[in-house]
Image 1: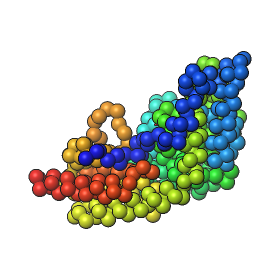
Image 2 (image 1 turned 120 degrees about the vertical axis):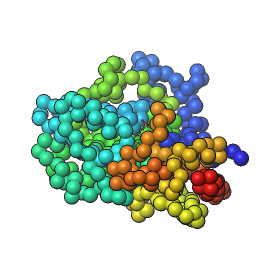
Image 3 (image 1 turned 45 degrees about the vertical axis):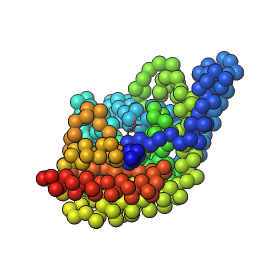
Image 4 (image 1 turned 60 degrees about the vertical axis):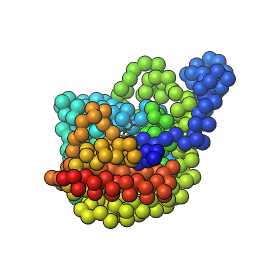
Length: 385
Ligand SMILES: Cc1ncc(COP(=O)(O)O)c(C=O)c1O
């Protein structure tokens, strides 16, 4: 049996429609020139396609193309916002940052670093289902608060935060608002003209573009006055030095355009898959779903099986079903999820949690087969203990 890939929240395959669009920007017969080499027509052609892609992305998000800055992905965008803003505004005495304890490590580790640089960070804890309490957020904001950084969709549980309400609150309180939208762009419609988000981090490889491309959308670049992370060739209006990967930029725009066209269709399809998997797994005794079934994207399910540590289940499944414990980790060490811990989940339920995430190319047959295989392995492991 071929392994069934159910780790779409970690990364997605590149869509065929996207690869075919990016190929002409790689090879000697195509437009491979450096888009900054505008002294010659080949460079100008490359620049033109970059700007066209920027406009396509901006149009989908209902913003202006000048507000889109290409980066290598959401990790970089998150670092650029938090460190860039912190260092540029430090002298104004605004040393307070608010985020949630369930953010991705690229936010939390930035915040930890900024704490060593004299900043004070409030880590809001959500309720048991992963939702933030906006009253708690409102009362955490002080005159020293520089920025509130909250993700739209959680990568481990799929829980959706009410970013429209948070944006309103931040506007009233006159603090910057950053949204890590790595897991939501291409999955949820977002209108930047109606929701006032100062900074939005996007990651291409979560929506069928290649790894290594993303962007940061900045509402008012002058007000933000970010300090760049990289210094160099002055690309991206001096905010992000480095040669732009034209093929990646084209790919991200193509992938987002495709996603936009399929948004509702994919959502409906993934909801069917979710129900199917829920039903299969619910046949087992001792199954606990972690997250919020009402405010969630359909394609991420976090579940704990009584008596089965996640590590044992992942080992049992590693050649048949590709699932994960949570965010992809480089160390190889299995750590209990900081997201579930922050939600107040403890004991065996915390250590038994796995994340199952699927996408556009997952078939109903695969979901059924994977669900059965997970049930079989859980029962087998339970029998052993
Ligand atoms: C919520 C969230 N933020 C940030 C990232 C990092 O994105 P990238 O891989 O583009 O650096 C991820 C990826 O796992 C994510 O899920």
